[in-house]
Image (tube, rainbow, N blue to C red; front, side, top):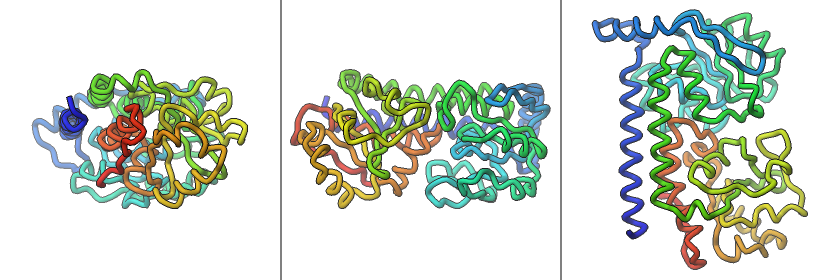
Length: 355
């Protein structure tokens, strides 16, 4: 089967996943205040899911009733909330500069509702006063580095679901993020359906590209030298989810974090079957990378086994977020690039997505 045929089949499966996500959201409750017999049934079903108690890094939080005014402090939590049919009243902006901090892969989930109020990620913690002014009845901080002091402060306003203790800060997998948010919203079954749909897209790509299972891969960015993402980072999990293997000893070098800058002596970590780079641009930044003799002399460069993703593009933002809504958008673009990089033919060009 040709690469073009494989890409067509894979795109078709991704379209099915997108339809599934939309269908689940359509079945969710609405915040519009308009009641109907079917809507009433949904509300009764949601009400029966409460109270729920969710464990996290700072203990556990009980959500006593269905939340109506959700604020997302976690930098990517808004996508799962939207996918489950709830529009947050407040979101935290990390990247992209999108209205409401809602990327193009998620904008249709607003359903005509006003965009959420955006809270800025200033690097000094949540904007407490602005969050309080939104009168939340649930604060989600799953993809976050929330401190105990910040958790205690926010808990004065509403129940707070912080990041899980079993992962590094900013290390929650998209599956657990979606299912935990589903539990907090009283929509566990819907969340599982969403997760299963995206898992199917990963599985389909693995089956169509068995060469991925024989390939090693690394995700990096030229930030203050070379910054490499560890196994608990969402970006590296994209590669692992497609069947590629991360470098041996990666986490030993990274330490207890989602990623770290590596020394010149560990440039060897980049010499994998494929190196995926998130770069400021796909021209000058690439030239600069290749001008570094230590990196430029690696086989991964000489044999054309690199994938470049523009950091500030919608594609780059979707990769960094890696949510239940953005992943189908990513896979449609990333899978063909990876296939071209690992096909064993140095003259195969790794094309940039059209959009």
